[in-house]
Amino acid sequence: MPTRGMLSFADASFSFEDAFFVLFGVPFDRTTTFRSGARFAPTAIREASINFEPDMLEHDVDLREVPFHDMGDLHEEGTADAMTLSIEEEAKRLVSAGKFPIAIGGEHSISPPVVKAFGSGISVVIIDAHLDYNDEYQGLKNSHACAHKRIEDTVGRGNVFAFGVRSMSRDEHPEDAVYADSYTVYERGCEEVFDEMLSRLKREPVYLSLDIDGIDPAYAPGTGTPEPFGLTAFDVRHIINALSDRLVGFDVVEVCPPCDNGNTSVLAARLVREVVAVKWKSLKRRR
Ligand code: MN
Ligand code: MN
Image (cartoon, rainbow, N blue to C red; front, side, top):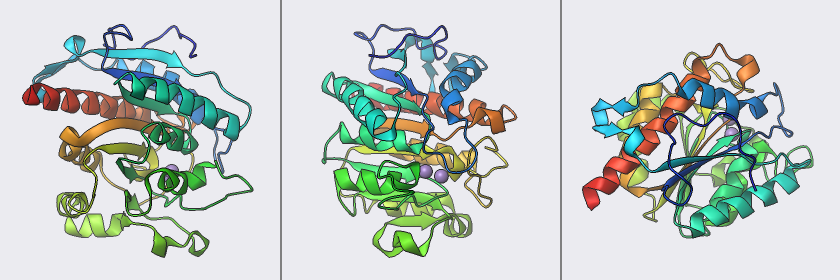
């Protein structure tokens, strides 16, 4: 069970029972390979969330009226394997209760167990500078450098699409992965490349995993393994809006507050709000 922190994500004011969107933090960064500190992100992103007006007029959504709950942070487990099991258990509880999970990392190793809670019937879109397609990294299967591979273990090859990638090694066998690199996105435009990708996703429900380093360090400098030539904040906004009806869950990972000037946490908080507003608007439209 999670611990209830002092601070909640802004406007997440409904009870667990009444909420549709349920946010939880996973302050875990033990497999980080370069700069550590992602464990501080859940708190920093909650603090940054206070920055915004509850009204999102461009979506005609007042977040105070959206059934949104923040259940606090999961306990940190000592190893990546123990943490993975604990996240999966908690995520399963949410998914079986019909909730829309929003996980705030922590590093990218926290995403595969959230996806696993949905089982094999979904597609997954990953936004990331890194392919994360290692079967094992530094002896660990549950390393953040294996996130894409572990997600593929659950949903199967061809049902995961990585977007904005620009860092990988030959040892990862990138020829087996499905991805769009950030150079192509820049040259052809995010809309065209993403829409083409969307038409190739075979399953209707889509889970979105946002490794913040997929976005250019100019917009998101506060991350453990920054890579130049990334996506813009508008690109990610487009992706969230293009997925709206199909979205079933979301995570944002790899924000590293000790490396940040504050803007990365603000952007992460704003993208959580974007997901909530866009999905809520889509549900209201369908009713
Ligand atoms: Mn990653
Ligand atoms: Mn990454």
